Length: 153
Image (cartoon, rainbow, N blue to C red):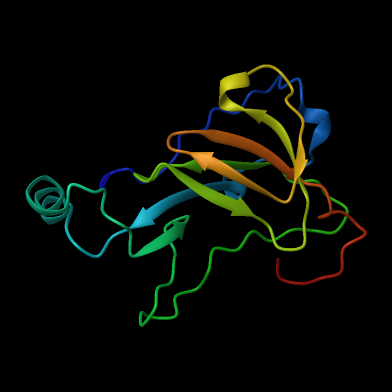
């Protein structure tokens, strides 16, 4: 999947769930993918001719940024928030691996909807999600409201 690099978001001005959040913009779109240092053609040749197993990524990437053992200390992706506001996170798995796990430290998350339930509210409150390949989950971190201290999550 060396060429999957982003998400296309169509914002609905008549979103029936708009009352659940205050902020929904390009800064709250989160893409999850795997990062490989070996070119895709080499990984494919190894898969077909040698290992017969799906290559293991060198790192996971959040909006294109990730760290790995022995690699550079690149900056993490940051979503700046203001106290008292509710943020809609559109989390998309654009990776090759079957799933990624997503969480926000010290936060509980509520699902607004899964892509398979478009137009319906599907509610669940958990601490993390498994997001499968090519799936979108719309989340609201409940505790990113006025009751949370300033910090990194």
